[in-house]
Amino acid sequence: MGGAGKPATEEDAALRWAYRTMQTIRCFEERLHADFAAGKVPSSVHLYAGQEASATGICAHLGEQDYFHITHRAHGPAIARGADLKAIAQEIWLRAGGLCSGKGGSPHLHDARLKLVGANGGVGSGAALACGSALATRHRGDGGVVVCLLGDGAINQGVVAESFNLAAVWSLPVVFAFENNGYAEATGTAYAIAGNDIAARGAAVGMPIARVDGADYFAVHATAGEAIARARAGGGPSLVEMQVPRFFGHYEGDAQKYRAAGEVAELRRSRDCLVAFRERVLGAGLLTAAELAGIDAKIAAEVDEAFSTAAAAAPPAAAALLSDVYAGRI
Ligand SMILES: Cc1ncc(C[n+]2csc(CCOP(=O)(O)OP(=O)(O)O)c2C)c(N)n1
Ligand SMILES: [Mg+2]
Image (cartoon, rainbow, N blue to C red; front, side, top):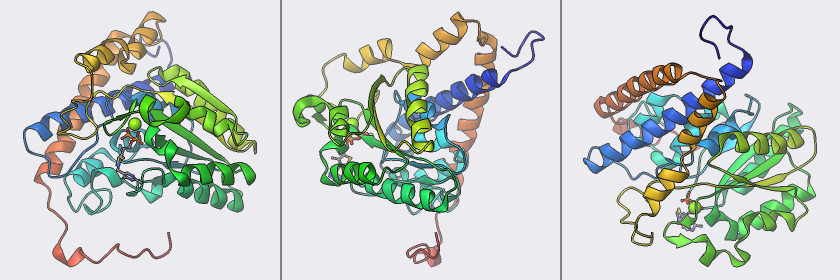
């Protein structure tokens, strides 16, 4: 704990970063939910609330040489990777100042400078792109690793099976990190995934696998850390499956008739990563309630400013329509 005359340690800083990151994501998504319901948001959005511990526990281990491939449920992972909050908000509002100049929108957040590789239209395709990033970083010899987020829905895609095989055959420095939130759109995992075991598919190609409670920041941090360290040390690919709750619909506007009555309320009561984190750090005396409250207040102001800036910002100019269509050197 950094307060009360005690010097802040590296561990204090890491805990504060983790809390700040998860709370920023939650605050951003709750506000986005409210603004969407009020008709203020001009694009479709998939909210990440409930899943914060997963991207945060992973990004705690990533340096600037590492790649983070994300999915259409993009806001939280982009925040965890350190993308600019105002640029994220402006991208969702399709503004010129957005992360992709307002041309990608919510599901395609991408920031090449951060090696944050955004989703494309095909669920699961990120797995193949991640193999490409892993091959590139290994050829450069810069010690980089790649973490590829994937949803449970991606496990049945052919490209994912092919990517597992390629990553294993070439011993690529990649971690396939599945966020199993129980649903692919409205389809439940138990119904759609034969065997109902995502991690076992990785074991089939000889990858080390791990299953972890994705609502527990500390568990994700430890498990992802092990897989990332293995990849960095030349130990090849791994698969990590994180069980995470999804607090909102597949997309905003989803009536969620496929969910049991009270399901979300129960998840919020029993599987909230922020509640668990607060209990743990306060119980162990690692951070104080006053510190957390101070962080919360600062984040609320930052999110408010990002949203007001986005709402007032200009869209891309018509003359910019054909720029960024073909990449030069990337
Ligand atoms: C190849 C392909 N099939 C179907 C879709 C339509 N689609 C978009 S998101 C989605 C669900 C993905 O579920 P999951 O991978 O579990 O991620 P989640 O939305 O739960 O984060 C589907 C089926 C698509 N974009 N690409
Ligand atoms: Mg899912």
